[in-house]
Image (cartoon, rainbow, N blue to C red):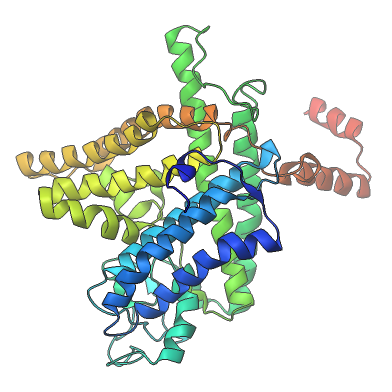
Length: 433
């Protein structure tokens, strides 16, 4: 039996291969997939609860045993991604085990689009089955359910706010081309911001050895200004990489699995324009883990402590997700710092609720924008420092010769040479101007 401690302190990871994949990951996915089938069927509650410990044990074994980095320090971030996926699998399986009603898939029609915070079109007669989902249909639906974190096209996504999208006015080809353009942009932006953060200190946190972003040799004002710039760059890096992965999956599922573009609405809702922590965390930041955090964290604690407990429960669950991800880097990740960031965000939301109850006014406007970013960025300094200490900030996500920014520079140089411009000529033109 594999102890939970192995997930916290990974030991003797096995390099990914066909054999290790079938031994460690496949049992976790099969049990997870089975839970996805069962949650759509009536009278399966006892079976789901009985299967849950098996699923969690298999998930723990996979997360603590596989090595996706192949022993290369620069690719340890892949093990972080593995543990994040395994923890998500565990949260979803737990939510499915205790689901009070069977999940139903909404029949997406080609002319239906997602916009605002609702699903357009009538919802009548659009469920796959008003009684019990047939077994074959449940198996087919489970493929979508297993990767559909927001619940697009499912009845359990009630209350999910979806950013406005123009995908309903585009053909599939136009949608794929625009998604490809976004993918290229996010790849460039991700490479640029992550590289800029590393360049602040290539020998310490800019390397896989890791280090602090707080330079003790600098006076306090310079030290924290520098750490704040690094924090902002790292925050943008996180945003760009999440968008990059989302665009890749969008093309994959629309092109290869023939899903409708409306099943892939925008992931973020301009989070940089948030005028309150409530709007930032409530719907403007991505909502991929919303249902997991509510089911596993918010709902149980809200029964005991009301709304305050619910808010704390959701952010504590998020803290556990991120903490275990950093531990997979095998370099540490202080729990007080990681959990502390998410606890402070919960405290900020509670403060906003108290302000509204006392004044009758919601946090909003320019002052709300200022408050939101001061609160997030200040506490994020310590979170990014935790990333830096385990070597995450110093990870190189692309081979040096294949970095998107490097490829773009080579492309521009080649294009200029084709049109008869040399680098010296370009410099002379710039100097004359």
